Image 1 (cartoon, one colour):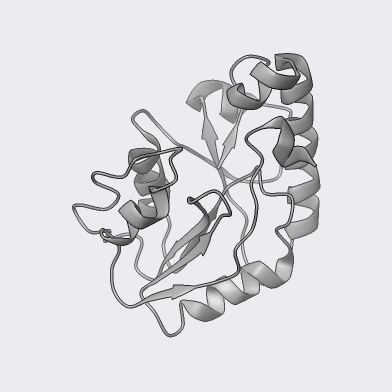
Image 2 (cartoon, rainbow, N blue to C red):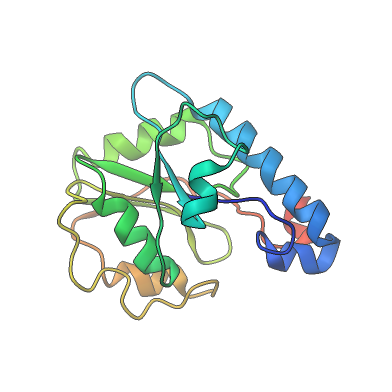
Amino acid sequence: MVKEPHPGRVKTRLGREIGVVRAAWWYRHQTRRLLRRLRDPRWQTVLAVTPDVEGFRSRAWPADLPRVPQGTGNLGQRMTRALSATPGPTLLIGSDIPGIRRRHIVAGFSALGRARTVIGPSCDGGFWLIGLHHPQRPPKDLFRGTRWSHQGTLADALHTLPRPIAMVDTLADVDTASDLR
């Protein structure tokens, strides 16, 4: 999931601390590094973009990567839409997680071989990865009642996910200046 890296519209909490231009610059370069690092012939990388129109035309990311719109709504609605647009087992990852490596993606897909859902917790109480074995048929209440950008995000989401659930490594995301360290 990626956002068009415009100052003031991406990484807003980080931008309040280090400036919106620096935050957008960090996000643009973080996303580029992430995409280079995760390219692999074992899976297809698709960008779930927002805003929809600008994201489709964006030159911030490689032109050869397919894109799907995130659409409107809260993060849970946008993630559900992105997951539902895929034909088979799917992992959806955040783009502000500097520690993601190919081995994490391999572990996520491997976990989907034995579970209907895989989740990668983040250090702040949220999650950096969500994967569904059958994303075209998400539960009707997927992410319902989940408090986003909150210490209880993961706990809230777990109640809505198809069982069994597998967990992969906990990684850190970047929301604030102290996270950059």
